[in-house]
Length: 250
Image 1 (tube, rainbow, N blue to C red):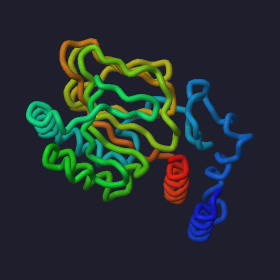
Image 2: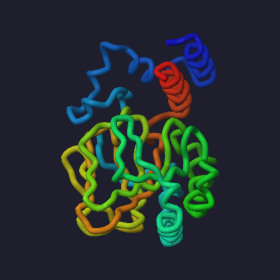
Image 3: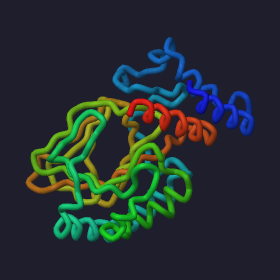
Image 4: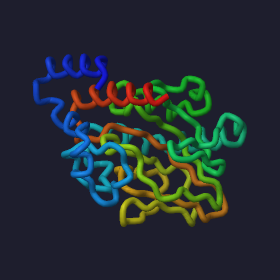
């Protein structure tokens, strides 16, 4: 670890207790990195020990995120109207989605939260979703500042190839905004479809893929949240750690 990380970790343990970062420090031990993995998490780079190895989660099962889930679903009609208007009138504000593994022209994104902040430049296009995110995810500290929230639009015929995301200490919430027939998602060994206006929640450190074989676009609102089984000191330490790793890699 760098001196900056060590200094911040020391401050966190001084505030929360000497054992508050045990799982984070265990994750960093090279000899232990493969010991806590489900076979379908094999391509994830960072696996925090002690996180339940559960691919699909109940979006209504966690009190911390329930207000966000309820607010998104209650606002679905307005969120969809905003997104439809943005897609029709401001297509140039969308961009090819840039995953850490690939960039796809048939996977379009409108970012509402990125680089640790709400994208104010997109708030005029998606005012409803931006407000819900601010009130129920950003201001509450529920959103993972290392990642993002965006409208994810798969064009007809598009597929997202099987892959694992980088780590298991955040979790992916989908609000199904506009769902045609012929769309679906597989996480680990279970495939599901989206129900328009409802949320899905899954651990994307497990291998997953998605497809749109329909004849029109499929859009979900994706929000990267802290995994509910992480603690406040762990979230603080992981933010510092991954920010520094990303800086050094850049």
